[in-house]
Amino acid sequence: MAGSILNIRNSQAKPLSEIPSLPFEKFCDFVIAQIREGARVVSFFGTPKTNATFMLTMVLAYDNDGQLGIVSTSVKDTYPSLTPQLPQVHWFEREIFEQWQVRPDGHPWLKPIRFHNPCTENSLGNSSQDILPSVTDFMKVHGQEPHEVAVGPVHAGIIEPGHFRFQCHGEHVFHLEISLGYQHRGIERALAAGSGKRTIHYMETSAGDTTIGHALAYCQAMEGLSDCAVPLRASAIRGIMLELERLANHTGDLGALANDVGYLPTSSYCGRLRGDFLNMTALICGNRFGRNIVRPGGVMFDLDDSLITELQNRLDKIFNDVKNAVSLLWSSSFVVDRFDETGIVTKKTALDLGLVGPAARACGIERDVRFDFPTGIYQFSHIPLSTYSSGDVFARAYVRWLEIQRSTEFIRDQLKNLPDSAVMAAMPPLKKQSMVVSLIEGWRGEICHAITTDINGNISQYKITDPSFHNWIGLAMALRGEDISDFPLCNKSFNLSYCGHDL
Image 1 (spheres, rainbow, N blue to C red):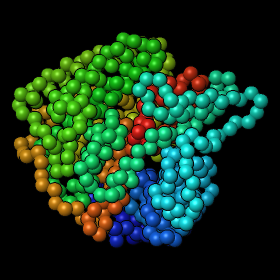
Image 2 (image 1 turned 90 degrees about the vertical axis):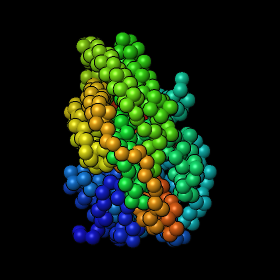
Image 3 (image 1 turned 120 degrees about the vertical axis):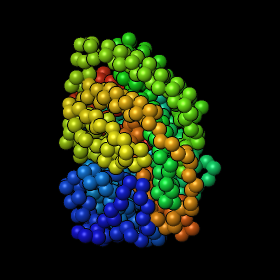
Protein backbone atom coordinates (compact mmCIF):
# COMPACT_ATOMS: atom_id res chain seq x y z
CA MET A 1 0.00 0.00 0.00
CA ALA A 2 2.28 2.72 -1.31
CA GLY A 3 1.62 6.08 0.26
CA SER A 4 -0.14 4.55 3.27
CA ILE A 5 2.63 5.52 5.66
CA LEU A 6 5.28 8.22 6.03
CA ASN A 7 8.72 6.65 6.43
CA ILE A 8 11.24 8.64 8.46
CA ARG A 9 14.54 8.14 10.24
CA ASN A 10 15.08 8.51 13.94
CA SER A 11 14.85 12.26 14.77
CA GLN A 12 14.05 13.28 11.21
CA ALA A 13 11.39 16.01 11.05
CA LYS A 14 8.73 15.98 8.35
CA PRO A 15 5.80 18.33 7.52
CA LEU A 16 2.50 17.30 9.08
CA SER A 17 0.94 17.51 5.63
CA GLU A 18 2.98 14.47 4.54
CA ILE A 19 1.49 12.15 7.19
CA PRO A 20 -1.11 9.95 5.44
CA SER A 21 -4.63 9.90 6.91
CA LEU A 22 -6.49 6.68 6.10
CA PRO A 23 -10.14 5.81 6.62
CA PHE A 24 -10.34 3.85 9.85
CA GLU A 25 -11.03 0.49 8.19
CA LYS A 26 -8.00 0.86 5.93
CA PHE A 27 -5.93 2.18 8.84
CA CYS A 28 -6.85 -0.87 10.91
CA ASP A 29 -6.13 -3.35 8.10
CA PHE A 30 -2.85 -1.63 7.24
CA VAL A 31 -1.53 -1.52 10.81
CA ILE A 32 -2.48 -5.15 11.50
CA ALA A 33 -0.74 -6.26 8.30
CA GLN A 34 2.40 -4.28 9.12
CA ILE A 35 2.70 -5.71 12.62
CA ARG A 36 2.15 -9.25 11.38
CA GLU A 37 5.04 -8.66 8.98
CA GLY A 38 7.37 -7.61 11.81
CA ALA A 39 6.66 -3.96 12.62
CA ARG A 40 5.82 -2.89 16.17
CA VAL A 41 4.03 0.01 17.87
CA VAL A 42 6.34 2.69 19.23
CA SER A 43 3.67 5.25 20.07
CA PHE A 44 -0.08 5.73 19.57
CA PHE A 45 -1.79 8.94 20.63
CA GLY A 46 -4.71 11.22 19.92
CA THR A 47 -5.21 14.82 18.84
CA PRO A 48 -8.52 16.71 18.76
CA LYS A 49 -9.23 18.17 15.30
CA THR A 50 -12.69 19.69 15.63
CA ASN A 51 -15.64 19.35 17.97
CA ALA A 52 -16.77 16.31 16.04
CA THR A 53 -13.60 14.52 14.91
CA PHE A 54 -10.39 13.30 16.45
CA MET A 55 -7.09 12.21 14.91
CA LEU A 56 -5.30 9.05 16.02
CA THR A 57 -1.61 8.90 15.09
CA MET A 58 0.47 5.73 15.26
CA VAL A 59 4.26 5.45 15.05
CA LEU A 60 5.54 2.06 13.87
CA ALA A 61 9.12 0.80 14.08
CA TYR A 62 10.70 -1.36 11.39
CA ASP A 63 13.68 -2.62 13.36
CA ASN A 64 15.27 -4.59 10.53
CA ASP A 65 15.20 -1.58 8.20
CA GLY A 66 16.10 1.13 10.70
CA GLN A 67 12.99 3.04 9.65
CA LEU A 68 10.04 4.55 11.49
CA GLY A 69 6.61 4.97 9.97
CA ILE A 70 3.79 7.41 10.80
CA VAL A 71 0.17 6.89 9.82
CA SER A 72 -3.05 8.48 11.07
CA THR A 73 -6.82 8.18 10.92
CA SER A 74 -9.83 10.25 11.94
CA VAL A 75 -12.56 9.01 14.26
CA LYS A 76 -15.45 10.49 16.19
CA ASP A 77 -16.27 9.65 19.81
CA THR A 78 -15.89 5.88 19.33
CA TYR A 79 -13.97 3.43 17.17
CA PRO A 80 -13.55 -0.38 17.10
CA SER A 81 -10.73 -1.32 19.46
CA LEU A 82 -7.52 -2.65 17.91
CA THR A 83 -6.48 -4.39 21.13
CA PRO A 84 -8.18 -7.79 20.50
CA GLN A 85 -6.01 -8.19 17.40
CA LEU A 86 -3.01 -6.08 18.47
CA PRO A 87 -2.23 -6.49 22.19
CA GLN A 88 0.61 -3.97 21.82
CA VAL A 89 -1.91 -1.09 21.75
CA HIS A 90 -3.99 -2.10 24.79
CA TRP A 91 -2.31 0.42 27.13
CA PHE A 92 -2.26 3.16 24.47
CA GLU A 93 -6.00 2.81 23.82
CA ARG A 94 -6.75 3.10 27.51
CA GLU A 95 -4.60 6.23 27.64
CA ILE A 96 -6.39 7.79 24.66
CA PHE A 97 -9.75 7.09 26.25
CA GLU A 98 -8.62 8.50 29.57
CA GLN A 99 -7.18 11.65 28.03
CA TRP A 100 -9.74 12.45 25.36
CA GLN A 101 -12.86 10.36 26.14
CA VAL A 102 -12.72 8.62 22.75
CA ARG A 103 -13.93 5.09 23.43
CA PRO A 104 -12.30 2.00 21.84
CA ASP A 105 -15.38 -0.23 21.60
CA GLY A 106 -14.56 -3.84 22.39
CA HIS A 107 -11.46 -3.12 24.47
CA PRO A 108 -11.26 -6.06 26.92
CA TRP A 109 -10.40 -4.03 30.03
CA LEU A 110 -11.09 -0.33 29.54
CA LYS A 111 -10.21 1.53 32.73
CA PRO A 112 -8.02 4.45 33.82
CA ILE A 113 -4.27 4.00 33.84
CA ARG A 114 -3.36 7.31 35.49
CA PHE A 115 -6.44 8.70 37.29
CA HIS A 116 -6.63 12.20 35.87
CA ASN A 117 -9.33 14.25 34.21
CA PRO A 118 -9.56 14.49 30.41
CA CYS A 119 -7.18 16.94 28.74
CA THR A 120 -10.08 19.09 27.55
CA GLU A 121 -13.35 19.48 29.33
CA ASN A 122 -16.08 17.69 27.37
CA SER A 123 -13.52 17.31 24.58
CA LEU A 124 -15.87 15.65 22.10
CA GLY A 125 -19.18 16.42 23.66
CA ASN A 126 -18.93 13.62 26.24
CA SER A 127 -19.72 14.19 29.89
CA SER A 128 -16.61 14.55 32.06
CA GLN A 129 -16.58 13.49 35.70
CA ASP A 130 -13.79 13.85 38.22
CA ILE A 131 -11.61 10.75 38.33
CA LEU A 132 -10.62 9.78 41.85
CA PRO A 133 -7.37 7.88 42.51
CA SER A 134 -7.84 4.16 43.21
CA VAL A 135 -11.58 4.24 42.41
CA THR A 136 -11.69 1.52 39.79
CA ASP A 137 -12.74 -2.05 39.18
CA PHE A 138 -10.25 -4.88 39.46
CA MET A 139 -10.28 -8.24 37.74
CA LYS A 140 -11.90 -10.96 39.85
CA VAL A 141 -11.29 -14.69 40.02
CA HIS A 142 -14.51 -16.32 41.19
CA GLY A 143 -14.84 -19.37 43.39
CA GLN A 144 -14.78 -20.33 47.06
CA GLU A 145 -11.01 -20.67 47.53
CA PRO A 146 -9.33 -17.88 45.48
CA HIS A 147 -8.50 -14.74 47.42
CA GLU A 148 -7.03 -11.28 46.78
CA VAL A 149 -3.84 -9.78 48.15
CA ALA A 150 -3.50 -6.01 47.85
CA VAL A 151 -0.10 -4.29 48.04
CA GLY A 152 0.28 -0.51 48.01
CA PRO A 153 -0.15 2.14 46.79
CA VAL A 154 1.83 3.27 49.85
CA HIS A 155 5.13 1.37 50.12
CA ALA A 156 7.95 1.30 52.61
CA GLY A 157 11.06 3.42 52.16
CA ILE A 158 11.38 5.61 49.06
CA ILE A 159 9.32 3.50 46.64
CA GLU A 160 6.84 5.58 44.65
CA PRO A 161 3.09 4.88 44.83
CA GLY A 162 1.62 1.98 42.89
CA HIS A 163 -1.02 -0.62 43.66
CA PHE A 164 -0.62 -4.35 42.97
CA ARG A 165 -3.67 -6.63 43.22
CA PHE A 166 -2.95 -10.37 43.24
CA GLN A 167 -5.64 -12.98 42.51
CA CYS A 168 -4.37 -16.07 44.32
CA HIS A 169 -5.13 -19.60 45.36
CA GLY A 170 -2.98 -20.11 48.41
CA GLU A 171 0.49 -18.98 47.32
CA HIS A 172 -0.26 -19.54 43.63
CA VAL A 173 -0.85 -16.36 41.57
CA PHE A 174 -3.52 -16.52 38.89
CA HIS A 175 -3.21 -12.90 37.87
CA LEU A 176 -1.47 -9.68 38.92
CA GLU A 177 -3.19 -6.40 38.11
CA ILE A 178 -1.09 -3.25 38.30
CA SER A 179 -2.71 0.12 38.99
CA LEU A 180 -0.60 3.27 38.66
CA GLY A 181 -1.14 6.98 38.20
CA TYR A 182 -1.22 8.15 41.80
CA GLN A 183 1.22 11.01 41.16
CA HIS A 184 0.26 12.09 37.66
CA ARG A 185 2.13 15.35 37.06
CA GLY A 186 0.75 16.56 33.73
CA ILE A 187 4.15 16.96 32.08
CA GLU A 188 2.90 16.33 28.53
CA ARG A 189 0.11 18.86 28.99
CA ALA A 190 2.59 21.47 30.27
CA LEU A 191 4.95 20.85 27.34
CA ALA A 192 2.17 21.34 24.79
CA ALA A 193 2.12 25.02 25.78
CA GLY A 194 5.50 25.44 24.08
CA SER A 195 9.14 25.52 25.14
CA GLY A 196 10.13 27.60 28.14
CA LYS A 197 12.65 27.79 30.96
CA ARG A 198 11.04 24.82 32.71
CA THR A 199 11.05 22.51 29.68
CA ILE A 200 14.50 21.00 30.20
CA HIS A 201 13.68 20.56 33.90
CA TYR A 202 10.58 18.59 32.92
CA MET A 203 12.74 16.43 30.68
CA GLU A 204 15.39 15.75 33.32
CA THR A 205 12.77 14.82 35.92
CA SER A 206 10.39 12.82 33.72
CA ALA A 207 11.99 9.77 35.31
CA GLY A 208 14.74 10.95 37.63
CA ASP A 209 16.92 7.85 37.29
CA THR A 210 16.79 8.36 33.50
CA THR A 211 17.81 12.02 33.45
CA ILE A 212 20.24 11.65 30.54
CA GLY A 213 17.94 9.39 28.52
CA HIS A 214 14.93 11.69 28.54
CA ALA A 215 16.94 14.90 28.23
CA LEU A 216 18.77 13.44 25.25
CA ALA A 217 15.52 12.33 23.58
CA TYR A 218 14.19 15.87 23.94
CA CYS A 219 17.35 17.56 22.67
CA GLN A 220 17.60 15.15 19.76
CA ALA A 221 14.01 15.98 18.79
CA MET A 222 14.65 19.73 18.97
CA GLU A 223 17.75 19.33 16.83
CA GLY A 224 15.77 17.35 14.27
CA LEU A 225 13.10 20.04 14.14
CA SER A 226 15.73 22.73 13.54
CA ASP A 227 18.24 20.82 11.37
CA CYS A 228 20.93 21.48 13.98
CA ALA A 229 24.17 19.53 13.50
CA VAL A 230 25.58 18.55 16.89
CA PRO A 231 29.41 18.64 17.11
CA LEU A 232 30.94 15.17 17.13
CA ARG A 233 32.74 15.75 20.44
CA ALA A 234 29.44 16.68 22.06
CA SER A 235 27.85 13.51 20.65
CA ALA A 236 30.65 11.43 22.16
CA ILE A 237 30.25 13.07 25.59
CA ARG A 238 26.50 12.46 25.39
CA GLY A 239 27.20 8.79 24.71
CA ILE A 240 29.54 8.61 27.70
CA MET A 241 26.89 10.14 29.95
CA LEU A 242 24.16 7.82 28.70
CA GLU A 243 26.30 4.73 29.27
CA LEU A 244 27.35 5.92 32.74
CA GLU A 245 23.64 6.18 33.56
CA ARG A 246 23.21 2.61 32.31
CA LEU A 247 26.19 1.38 34.34
CA ALA A 248 24.94 2.95 37.57
CA ASN A 249 21.44 1.56 37.29
CA HIS A 250 22.36 -1.92 36.06
CA THR A 251 24.92 -2.24 38.86
CA GLY A 252 22.37 -1.11 41.41
CA ASP A 253 19.79 -3.55 40.04
CA LEU A 254 22.13 -6.52 40.32
CA GLY A 255 22.80 -5.57 43.93
CA ALA A 256 19.08 -5.22 44.62
CA LEU A 257 18.37 -8.61 43.05
CA ALA A 258 21.03 -10.14 45.27
CA ASN A 259 19.41 -8.46 48.26
CA ASP A 260 15.98 -9.87 47.35
CA VAL A 261 17.33 -13.42 47.72
CA GLY A 262 19.36 -12.59 50.83
CA TYR A 263 22.80 -12.71 49.19
CA LEU A 264 24.52 -9.85 50.99
CA PRO A 265 28.07 -9.85 49.52
CA THR A 266 26.95 -8.76 46.05
CA SER A 267 24.18 -6.61 47.49
CA SER A 268 26.56 -4.63 49.68
CA TYR A 269 29.22 -4.19 47.01
CA CYS A 270 26.87 -3.16 44.21
CA GLY A 271 25.07 -0.63 46.35
CA ARG A 272 28.36 1.17 46.90
CA LEU A 273 29.55 0.72 43.31
CA ARG A 274 26.37 2.27 41.92
CA GLY A 275 27.30 5.35 43.90
CA ASP A 276 30.80 5.30 42.41
CA PHE A 277 29.35 5.44 38.87
CA LEU A 278 27.05 8.28 39.94
CA ASN A 279 30.08 10.09 41.31
CA MET A 280 31.76 9.78 37.91
CA THR A 281 28.74 11.51 36.40
CA ALA A 282 28.97 14.24 39.05
CA LEU A 283 32.67 14.67 38.27
CA ILE A 284 31.72 15.62 34.72
CA CYS A 285 28.76 17.94 35.30
CA GLY A 286 28.41 18.48 39.06
CA ASN A 287 25.24 16.40 39.44
CA ARG A 288 25.14 12.69 40.25
CA PHE A 289 22.11 12.10 38.02
CA GLY A 290 23.49 14.07 35.09
CA ARG A 291 21.39 17.20 35.22
CA ASN A 292 22.61 20.40 33.58
CA ILE A 293 24.79 18.83 30.90
CA VAL A 294 22.64 17.79 27.89
CA ARG A 295 21.14 20.77 26.08
CA PRO A 296 19.80 21.35 22.54
CA GLY A 297 22.84 21.79 20.31
CA GLY A 298 25.33 19.83 22.40
CA VAL A 299 26.56 19.67 26.00
CA MET A 300 27.32 22.26 28.65
CA PHE A 301 30.56 20.68 29.94
CA ASP A 302 33.71 19.60 28.13
CA LEU A 303 36.34 17.07 29.24
CA ASP A 304 39.93 18.21 29.56
CA ASP A 305 42.94 15.87 29.62
CA SER A 306 43.22 15.66 33.40
CA LEU A 307 39.51 14.86 33.75
CA ILE A 308 39.72 12.20 31.04
CA THR A 309 42.63 10.55 32.87
CA GLU A 310 40.73 10.62 36.17
CA LEU A 311 37.63 9.12 34.54
CA GLN A 312 39.68 6.34 32.92
CA ASN A 313 41.31 5.42 36.21
CA ARG A 314 38.01 5.44 38.08
CA LEU A 315 36.25 3.41 35.39
CA ASP A 316 38.88 0.66 35.44
CA LYS A 317 38.83 0.42 39.23
CA ILE A 318 35.04 0.42 39.54
CA PHE A 319 34.55 -2.11 36.77
CA ASN A 320 37.02 -4.52 38.37
CA ASP A 321 35.09 -4.26 41.62
CA VAL A 322 31.78 -4.81 39.82
CA LYS A 323 33.24 -7.83 38.05
CA ASN A 324 34.29 -9.36 41.37
CA ALA A 325 30.93 -8.64 43.01
CA VAL A 326 28.91 -10.06 40.12
CA SER A 327 31.18 -13.11 39.88
CA LEU A 328 30.19 -13.90 43.46
CA LEU A 329 26.56 -13.76 42.35
CA TRP A 330 26.99 -16.27 39.51
CA SER A 331 29.15 -18.57 41.63
CA SER A 332 26.41 -19.03 44.22
CA SER A 333 24.31 -22.08 43.36
CA PHE A 334 21.62 -20.82 45.73
CA VAL A 335 21.30 -17.51 43.85
CA VAL A 336 21.32 -19.10 40.40
CA ASP A 337 18.72 -21.66 41.48
CA ARG A 338 16.50 -18.87 42.83
CA PHE A 339 16.82 -16.82 39.63
CA ASP A 340 16.50 -19.73 37.21
CA GLU A 341 12.99 -20.36 35.79
CA THR A 342 11.43 -17.67 38.02
CA GLY A 343 9.10 -15.15 36.39
CA ILE A 344 9.33 -16.46 32.82
CA VAL A 345 8.06 -14.31 29.96
CA THR A 346 8.10 -16.19 26.66
CA LYS A 347 9.46 -14.65 23.49
CA LYS A 348 6.01 -14.81 21.87
CA THR A 349 4.41 -12.98 24.79
CA ALA A 350 7.16 -10.34 24.73
CA LEU A 351 6.65 -9.81 21.00
CA ASP A 352 2.85 -9.68 21.28
CA LEU A 353 3.02 -7.08 24.06
CA GLY A 354 5.82 -5.03 22.50
CA LEU A 355 8.29 -5.25 25.38
CA VAL A 356 11.48 -3.21 25.08
CA GLY A 357 14.92 -2.92 26.65
CA PRO A 358 16.60 -5.60 28.79
CA ALA A 359 13.18 -7.18 29.45
CA ALA A 360 12.81 -7.86 25.72
CA ARG A 361 16.43 -8.83 25.14
CA ALA A 362 16.19 -11.32 28.01
CA CYS A 363 13.50 -13.09 25.95
CA GLY A 364 15.86 -13.47 22.99
CA ILE A 365 14.54 -10.43 21.09
CA GLU A 366 17.23 -8.44 19.29
CA ARG A 367 15.83 -4.98 19.94
CA ASP A 368 18.01 -1.98 20.83
CA VAL A 369 17.70 1.60 19.56
CA ARG A 370 21.49 1.99 19.61
CA PHE A 371 21.72 -0.84 17.09
CA ASP A 372 18.47 -0.52 15.10
CA PHE A 373 18.04 3.28 14.98
CA PRO A 374 21.47 4.72 15.79
CA THR A 375 21.94 8.47 16.18
CA GLY A 376 24.78 10.63 17.44
CA ILE A 377 27.93 8.76 18.39
CA TYR A 378 26.21 5.38 17.98
CA GLN A 379 26.28 5.88 14.22
CA PHE A 380 30.07 5.58 14.36
CA SER A 381 30.75 3.46 17.45
CA HIS A 382 28.51 0.44 17.77
CA ILE A 383 27.68 -1.52 20.93
CA PRO A 384 26.99 -5.24 20.41
CA LEU A 385 23.52 -6.48 21.35
CA SER A 386 23.25 -8.26 24.68
CA THR A 387 20.61 -10.97 24.67
CA TYR A 388 19.60 -14.13 26.52
CA SER A 389 16.75 -16.48 25.68
CA SER A 390 15.19 -17.93 28.84
CA GLY A 391 13.02 -14.90 29.69
CA ASP A 392 13.33 -15.42 33.45
CA VAL A 393 14.86 -13.45 36.32
CA PHE A 394 18.24 -15.00 35.56
CA ALA A 395 18.07 -13.78 31.95
CA ARG A 396 17.06 -10.26 32.96
CA ALA A 397 19.95 -10.17 35.44
CA TYR A 398 22.49 -11.66 33.04
CA VAL A 399 21.59 -9.24 30.23
CA ARG A 400 22.37 -6.42 32.65
CA TRP A 401 25.80 -7.90 33.33
CA LEU A 402 26.51 -8.24 29.61
CA GLU A 403 25.52 -4.61 29.09
CA ILE A 404 27.72 -3.48 31.96
CA GLN A 405 30.72 -5.04 30.22
CA ARG A 406 29.89 -3.55 26.83
CA SER A 407 29.04 -0.09 28.14
CA THR A 408 32.34 -0.03 30.02
CA GLU A 409 34.25 -0.88 26.87
CA PHE A 410 32.32 1.79 24.95
CA ILE A 411 33.19 4.49 27.49
CA ARG A 412 36.84 3.45 27.50
CA ASP A 413 36.94 3.79 23.72
CA GLN A 414 35.23 7.20 23.73
CA LEU A 415 37.50 8.61 26.44
CA LYS A 416 40.53 7.42 24.51
CA ASN A 417 39.38 8.80 21.16
CA LEU A 418 37.38 11.95 21.88
CA PRO A 419 37.03 14.00 18.67
CA ASP A 420 38.54 17.47 18.66
CA SER A 421 35.67 19.91 18.10
CA ALA A 422 33.33 22.31 19.84
CA VAL A 423 30.73 20.98 22.27
CA MET A 424 27.82 23.30 21.40
CA ALA A 425 26.15 24.45 18.19
CA ALA A 426 23.68 27.26 17.63
CA MET A 427 20.00 26.24 17.48
CA PRO A 428 18.01 27.56 14.48
CA PRO A 429 14.24 28.12 14.89
CA LEU A 430 11.99 25.07 14.88
CA LYS A 431 10.25 24.07 11.68
CA LYS A 432 6.59 24.99 11.43
CA GLN A 433 3.75 22.45 11.28
CA SER A 434 6.14 19.51 11.45
CA MET A 435 6.53 16.29 13.40
CA VAL A 436 9.58 14.47 14.71
CA VAL A 437 10.00 11.15 16.52
CA SER A 438 13.10 10.83 18.72
CA LEU A 439 14.22 7.43 20.04
CA ILE A 440 16.90 6.81 22.68
CA GLU A 441 17.90 3.50 24.28
CA GLY A 442 17.68 4.37 27.95
CA TRP A 443 18.85 1.90 30.55
CA ARG A 444 15.31 0.52 30.89
CA GLY A 445 14.79 0.44 27.15
CA GLU A 446 13.36 2.49 24.35
CA ILE A 447 12.42 6.11 25.12
CA CYS A 448 10.19 7.81 22.54
CA HIS A 449 9.46 11.54 22.30
CA ALA A 450 7.03 12.48 19.50
CA ILE A 451 6.59 16.22 18.95
CA THR A 452 4.50 18.34 16.62
CA THR A 453 4.78 22.08 16.00
CA ASP A 454 2.12 24.61 15.07
CA ILE A 455 1.93 27.29 12.41
CA ASN A 456 4.26 29.52 14.42
CA GLY A 457 6.89 26.83 15.04
CA ASN A 458 5.91 26.32 18.68
CA ILE A 459 5.34 22.92 20.29
CA SER A 460 1.66 22.03 19.91
CA GLN A 461 1.75 18.43 21.16
CA TYR A 462 4.34 16.44 23.10
CA LYS A 463 3.96 12.68 23.55
CA ILE A 464 6.43 10.79 25.75
CA THR A 465 6.56 7.00 25.90
CA ASP A 466 8.83 5.79 28.67
CA PRO A 467 9.98 2.13 28.39
CA SER A 468 7.97 1.37 31.53
CA PHE A 469 4.79 2.15 29.57
CA HIS A 470 5.50 -0.91 27.39
CA ASN A 471 6.86 -3.15 30.13
CA TRP A 472 4.54 -2.97 33.16
CA ILE A 473 2.26 -5.55 31.54
CA GLY A 474 5.35 -7.78 31.13
CA LEU A 475 5.73 -7.86 34.91
CA ALA A 476 2.09 -8.92 35.24
CA MET A 477 2.69 -11.78 32.79
CA ALA A 478 5.84 -12.83 34.64
CA LEU A 479 3.81 -13.42 37.83
CA ARG A 480 1.21 -15.70 36.26
CA GLY A 481 1.61 -19.17 37.69
CA GLU A 482 4.29 -18.08 40.17
CA ASP A 483 4.20 -18.06 43.95
CA ILE A 484 3.34 -14.68 45.42
CA SER A 485 6.67 -14.75 47.29
CA ASP A 486 8.37 -14.41 43.89
CA PHE A 487 6.88 -10.96 43.33
CA PRO A 488 9.70 -8.87 44.88
CA LEU A 489 12.28 -10.72 42.82
CA CYS A 490 10.29 -10.44 39.59
CA ASN A 491 9.49 -6.80 40.27
CA LYS A 492 13.14 -5.90 40.78
CA SER A 493 14.19 -7.87 37.69
CA PHE A 494 12.08 -5.44 35.63
CA ASN A 495 12.68 -2.40 37.90
CA LEU A 496 10.16 -0.21 36.11
CA SER A 497 9.45 3.46 36.69
CA TYR A 498 6.29 4.74 38.36
CA CYS A 499 6.93 8.40 37.57
CA GLY A 500 8.08 7.60 34.02
CA HIS A 501 4.69 6.00 33.48
CA ASP A 502 2.73 8.77 35.24
CA LEU A 503 3.72 11.68 33.05
